[in-house]
Length: 345
Image 1 (cartoon, one colour):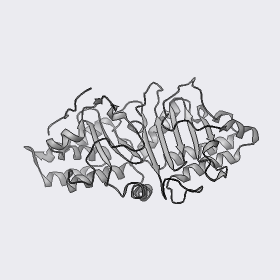
Image 2 (tube, one colour; image 1 turned 90 degrees about the vertical axis):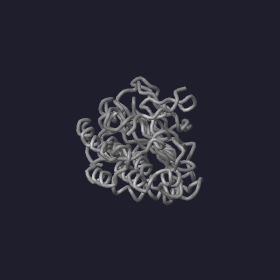
Image 3 (tube, one colour; image 1 turned 90 degrees about the horizontal axis):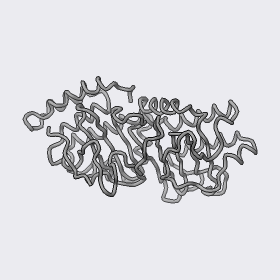
Image 4 (spheres, one colour; image 1 turned 30 degrees about the horizontal axis):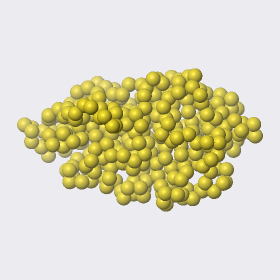
């Protein structure tokens, strides 16, 4: 077991490593001789153009005590939780201090919120805030953050966790992996057991898009697409090119059906900033595109017995998007361009 070790003293389109380092290196001026400088802080926030550069500013505002709790080496590993940076779960706390607690200053809390919003498309901000309000009492109430590596000085990653959330910002430090690693999102809009139409659930529209594909299938295709038992939701390991896939191959669908699967993919990645969307598409392309994926609908979790499938899965060699809608929405996402990347769940 490695001990925790501080790592230093001190939307938009994809950003190159050189541009990121140039932007975040300016954050070093935020602390002068170890003292917080409001003028330097304001200047660096105004110059920050990406969530990555805001992470750099945030890092430089952390004092030594804060770093000892929320900042880690890039490959920090714990006996029970494994490689902490790559862990994902439906309800967990990567560190103890809530974002909204007095552990963080007001300026730091604003920075964290800005980083969060920068990872999400603006039209989805209200939806994510609704999810956080319904599931956790609002933004900052119980969510936590951790930083791995040192922004501006090599690999780094910012991770935010809480109930129904694992979200990442990595500046493309995690090679071959979309989103910087596996992510999770979910929503229990009106209680643990939701009704068949999932009223108020901000992510249910994704399931409706997938079910539109199902409605286009003929009888034989539906039999191939249907599976009687939903796999364990956290089973999002990559199976590789020769894996045992569930459901119907997208390659066996007609052109109009394949086009509708493409719309499902667009709906799935729609909430996230453009650079993360681009990473998903690039990773998928490297493994053969959607035609290398399978689409499965699981019949054992049909809320209301309405044959609008609550549980379904789109999966390729190194692509897993598992949507569990019963009894409420849990979604596990794991995307890379190489099936050798391991999941820590």
